[in-house]
Image (cartoon, rainbow, N blue to C red):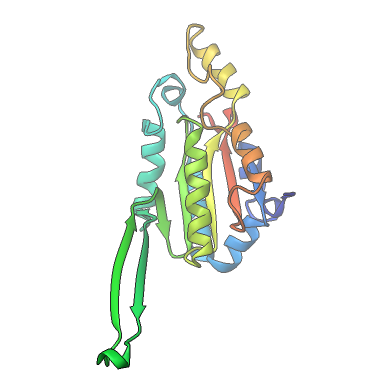
Length: 218
């Protein structure tokens, strides 16, 4: 699947300088068109984001202070955590056999429930997750959730906030030569996300990836 670049006309030069972007199916343009209020809130949160030295030195995982801080900004704007559950109702309708005196059909029903994946932030018809430094398998979970939500016509597009790899690794080493932060490439980052997008893991869902870079540093 080809990558698109509608974000270059939607996020402005300041954010283009600070963050790296990647998208499929013109996600930024779709978000700006279909959910303008929510898109404006995303731009606001990104514009006010600052990467601190503590964010780099902190060895925490997915729900580090950084991820929690971004989630909190969205909570203040009315975004809420959601979960993608699947409910399947199965019904067997048995027709009556009149010669046996049966008049009405009988129906047997059962409901199959499957608790699905959580999405960090949902508002209107937009899903958004923050994957700062978790296991890269989280990307599969997120894209699977977006695909299910989109195919069920519950969202128009999704946003995944993650990070770059090499420049942040170098920044971590410059702050602490013994740092192990970002030493492994099996954690969530744009380099791990990009091939998942291009092979179509999100199905038809437009997805915008926003990667925090060293240029976001205070």
